[in-house]
Image (cartoon, rainbow, N blue to C red; front, side):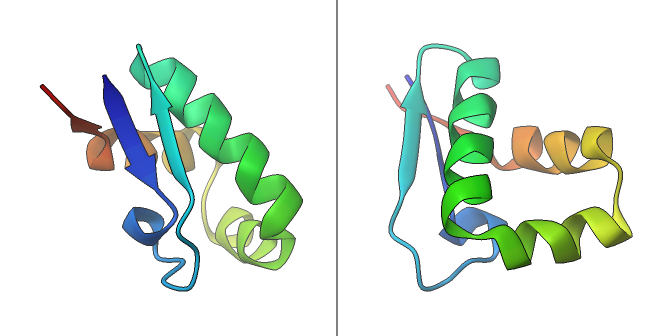
Length: 66
């Protein structure tokens, strides 16, 4: 199981946790959540980075739980 939280990505006020069987699933889940709940933060992040760079940052922060 893999996890990634909004807090991992710098949104310290959100307790959302994306959980999935693959890293790709977790990234997709967090992207969907962030677009719905944090549009300003997404806009700011995308102004500074490409989609691929953001996904790479997310992949680097994903935790594998045993």
